[in-house]
Length: 390
Image 1 (cartoon, rainbow, N blue to C red):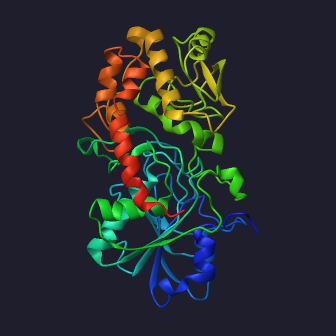
Image 2 (image 1 turned 45 degrees about the vertical axis):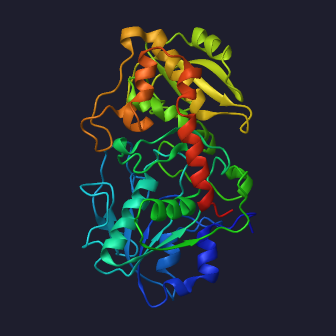
């Protein structure tokens, strides 16, 4: 037995009364597995006491078959169970009446990465809303925050910048589990669905994912490892620019760069900044797809040498500022559309505010920029405490 039991195992052992005699839908993806690698869909379909009628999947699909932003996938029937599989990343991101027509309760079992802009938590919130509106109950099978449940970092979303990559005020590195986030969303933002959170057993907030002894399955095509998840809260910011965030390489988000980057000079500058827990290695690489595809470009690989000291958002911000300084006019903010947003700049959507971009353009400096969001971050920390389960 692993050190930690995910909510899936606790549910199957002890809490089947929540769904007994009810028609069940699951929201799943590749990481929806137990400690023996069995998938939630298969466990539910083969269970004699579970009437599974419907399957739904988030961005990237239930098997991780699609790539990144706004690459949609369509409904189909599962080849094994023959159950309908509905996409929550197509013309709708929310379960429709048709999807829930043969359903009494929706079970959510997705592995999150600990960053606000990872869209699975938006999928959860929208599904909770749909369940409240259509009179269905909602169950969250809790899973670990893979980059620990203590550290909180980054900007807190301004409600005026609500989007699919951030529906509600939440720090970018939020330090919460999906179950805790469900409680937070349901109460603080008035969703008020019939919500049940099935907690894990054995999880402690200070744990990184490997310490749980649970198997890691990449939850999306560009999240291959816990190392990726650790840098993601900062390095995803590069999606809002013309700098490669490493898609099209074997180390996405750890590697980044652009044609104008001088890797050795960049590494030198970063090494002189207050960026604990990381080593910045100069590198050249050729993305096989996405930005700068088939071009050799210069950049940096982040090697995290001390996870507990490492600050991903501060580090990502420092790297972005340095890339902009080196690029001059060659550095550009990416234009919309981005994740179903067609007017606002993707970088502003990711930050949850346009203030950070304006401060970068004004060359305010990392320390001043970081100081500007601390009050809101402290407010979030205090509210967050009410919903922590562990």
